Image (cartoon, rainbow, N blue to C red; front, side, top):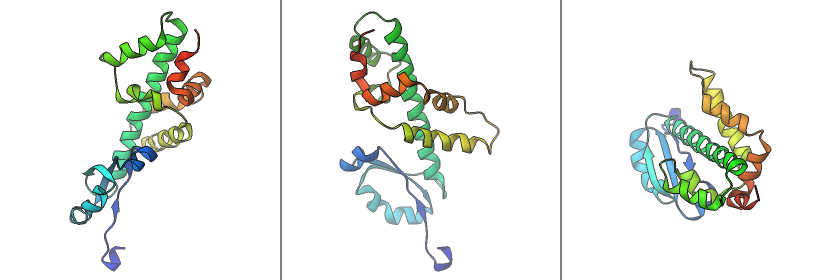
Length: 170
């Protein structure tokens, strides 16, 4: 590309299909800064936010970081509610609302009603994190925990049913 005097931007997006349908994607861009400035309006046409993050590859690193945070929060939420489902004797929906009002609330917890599917994506995304860590000296504890959680049938069921899962009797 550079031999032909072209420029490349990596431009992954987050918020998935629903974000695309609503024009609410977030674009993470890496590459040549001047090229980014020239193309920013194009990315803004389908993104609610557009971030220039640095040299080539930076957008992909940002998306990987975002996905790692998202899956870690999502599976932590599942685990907390799974524990509550086994021990809490009150109404789980009331507990859920109480958790939303507390300091442990997070965007993934707020969006449980839209849960469903996603397990192949979680495995792919966390696989990228684990693969990246092989090239560096850190051990991704939370990524490994999410990978292990992908084997838990109750968590898989919760992921598929979202808040409807809370309706099941203790």
